[in-house]
Length: 223
Image (cartoon, rainbow, N blue to C red; front, side, top):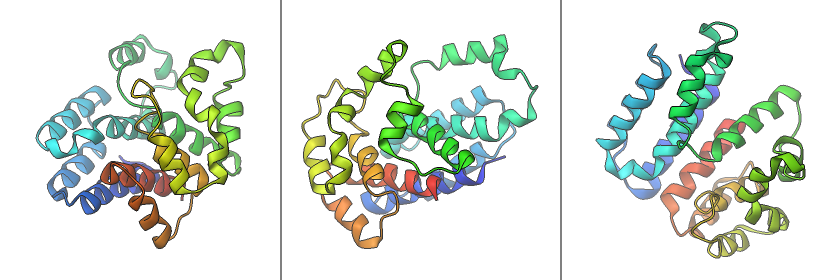
């Protein structure tokens, strides 16, 4: 089964990517939804999704984003059908080890948004960094390193798409937040953009199909 919020986010991701980049994504969309909605075990879903992307190379840039969505769907929906302590089992530990290099920091954002909904609080960048990721705590310095560029540019959530995009262009290629910086910061700047705001956001992007797809994914998941 597919979690409703994940379904909305998946639809927004693929549809926006296709529309903005003028890609034919109809067939891939149908295949992806069937994979997410299937009763297969998680590793088989990952393999099937990778094969679907292999067969639709125009969507390669979304491969790890799709993995993030598949994993959040597993946590939200699939795990409910498994044993109560499944996430502590050797089987799940083996899967975690196997997929250690998969996905992006988008997964943490989705987990944070889920927590915000559960606790009835509004998402905020400062809250995400300090209360969810605990970047100020000594034992979480890996997260601090990953989000170094975000931490240094927190004031951008009070600026504009143009300023966020300009700063995104200065982020080092070695940064783990390089690709996500523009949609990530833009979401915390404006989590509920109107049509004109979305058009402005897209117009400032260097990679509009990817940036628009990830931004609308976050918007849809948070709705």
